[in-house]
Amino acid sequence: MTLRTLRAQAEARLREAGIDTPELDARYLLEHALTLTRTDFITKAEQPIPDDDAARALALVERRAAREPVGRILGHREFWTIDLALNPDTLEPRPDTETVVEAVLAAIPDRKAALRLLDLGTGTGCILLALLSELPNAHGIGVDLSPLAVEAAAGNAARNGLAGRARFQTGDWANGIADRFDIVVSNPPYIPSADIAALEPEVRDHDPLRALDGGPDGLEPYRIIAAELPRLLVPGGLAAFEVGQGQAEQVAALVEAQGLAETAILCDLGGIKRCVRARNGL
Image 1 (cartoon, rainbow, N blue to C red):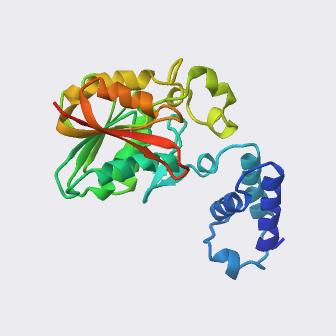
Image 2: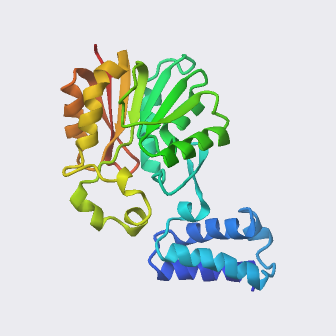
């Protein structure tokens, strides 16, 4: 079997399984299994693939056909300009979350300022680490209820050369945090409890439930965090949250009720209202 034939077989299997991006997913999986580069698919297309190597690659394809996400299979996921390792206690970062990073960066007049950041429910550390990668003099703290998530985030900071400016700790939202920050960010659980069973298998069966379930209406974590913002943020400090579809106006109202102002709602690339940003006027 040549590389070209193996790739075609992998793509056909994923297409048959109803995977939305069979060509892309097959390429990622074969690159990983066979230690290939993107160029190799052109320059080595007719190269024979040993049977053992082909079987190993096709085993990964079968996992994807069973709706396990590519990032879970590979054990890592690209986000913004960084690469993040995953574990079972971390939500897999998604492009939608980059909207929060963009929203924060757009509101910072001086990216070289010595800013202090707080990321609540940090997971892989994706939002905090992406921001630190763009803010060379900033430092940040990431908090997560899961010790395994904290372990992953700390490893990701080291993986991306940011360990000197990022600290991660276990905690229940902002409980025990006494400092004040220039920026508070969060991608909290926001799926209403009753909606979780209907999620795509890639999410429902592979992301940690604790990172998905936002309570009966999906807004419970926002209520908790919003109530803490006046004491967490310096005067003029910035808060930014990822929100679920249809939640932006409600989350904006929650932060405004705590005295925050200059509220903005920003859309992701799909046009969905994905981020709420506001400033502390106190």
